[in-house]
Image (tube, rainbow, N blue to C red; front, side, top):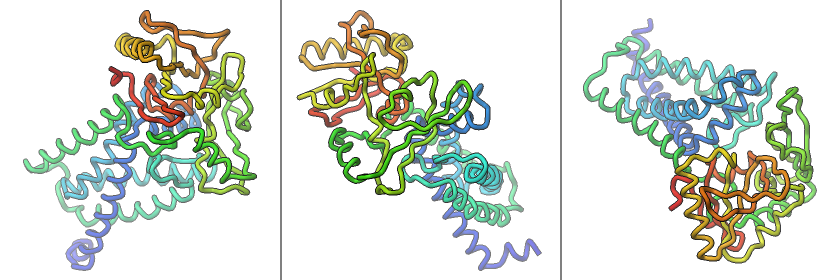
Length: 374
């Protein structure tokens, strides 16, 4: 019965369509995540926190790069029919796992966004679950069609393509981790005037209210904050869960741009003053002031020295709590004035622990990982 079905022309045509749809979906999904492994890592961290696996957080970036690369590699191998029997087994197993996981995310353990298409396409939990319900039978169909094939019998051409896809997929994720995403799908991309974008978002939202939901790291309880509430800036106490916009607003608005908020050590808002700076303004983004490695410190010093020669304004943004008026020196450089920014906002603006965002009259003109500052 099974062999007869597999030999029928209509079934071969159906499995061909299933294979193409599944492969292209995985290629798109894997690629948009591989160009932004930081975003995938943030989503994985959210899952680990909710499911109680916080001890695995130190390995989240390694897993992020592997997951993005594996998905892209699987899609490429299925598209080009490289060891299709082996790939289809992994496809079925992965779809069973993610279908169950997204069902939980849509029901008992709500998660705002699974990140299955990175920042490129945002899907609700139920939309993600529905997508997986479509992909699962496609994977099963492909697996059934190629079930008689040998699992590990690689030809020389297949082995070459497998190595090529693996190196390219994993290399793409590693490149974007060590530098910056080659495609930026976030609100703070080069060319955006932050003040204008924030004002446009406010105008479009009209009466909508942006609500930030954070989890208390100590007791696990959720709490809602308004944008003007400064308490959620304490990254050691609060961890971001989701951002919601009331139904009265325009649901096309990206609320992330409205989370841009910079304050001094006393909690005073300095956002408008910095964005109104005429000419160039260098924003040094540093996750931990005393956690910058030697090569990055040297690169930051080079930048600070250049800013001094150019007479360009330069400030340092950090999510670390500041006590008293804070100035910080990097590798013996001139001291730089430090201000507070939320950790999530900083990672949304710059996908790096340390780096530079350059503004010109409030418009983002360049973004660099500290490794690329010269």
